[in-house]
Image (cartoon, rainbow, N blue to C red; front, top):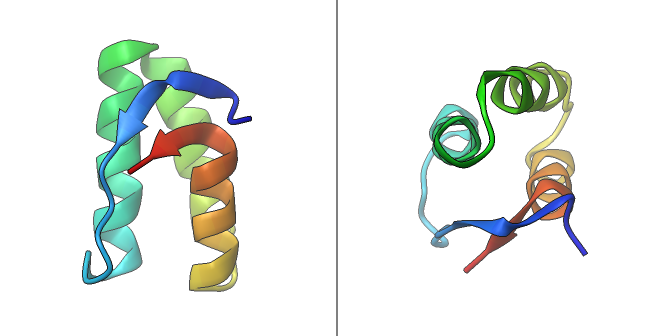
Length: 65
């Protein structure tokens, strides 16, 4: 179960570079939760060393479709 299950982000296979994925999640968190949650996610996401790590973090943070 993600940390913020009521926040949903649509991700598709070809969503592009990591920055786009990070931006989508950060915007959703900022809108639904607040600045602190978005900033915390941004920091953790930029520390990810691979796309797979980033996708795991996203799924642990928000619901994805």
